[in-house]
Image (cartoon, rainbow, N blue to C red; front, side):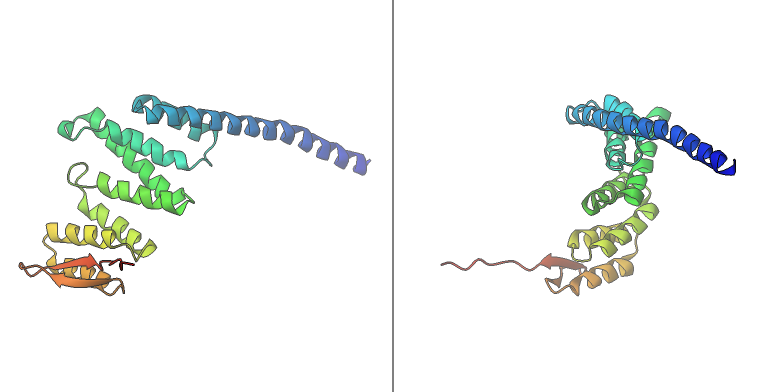
Length: 204
């Protein structure tokens, strides 16, 4: 009697879980189809349509994390710096920043995560949100994830310099100068500028 009851329960669980699994599979297939449509809209610069489709993709399958970057950039492309202060326009940038952050936090692909950080820094820049304090930790994270890339040091140093933090700017560039492929130089103004070593091709 007890055995039969247990067997009945197991059968019931299986019967319930199978439709759920089937529904999830259908949602994943639909998400992939929608993702393809979203990419086509994005490529033809129909960012309003792309936003709608990428949102649908993430609703059907949150595991397609790459959609966060393209959704963020679709919002970003609709933002107009000349209309800063207008609620609808500012909402585009706010949503772009939110999805860039989500992409940085959830994207398993290293290169896409780096790209998301670059666009996030740009979104925090003076032409957009103008939030240098929020750019700084992202740039620090970019340096930690790719210490050999001089561009990240330059951007962070420029951020410090524009904020009047000249000692911090010099410290960042000095850190970069320790990389074996680069050496520090000083301009006539006395500030550090780092340049990659030039590669000279020997003639045969």
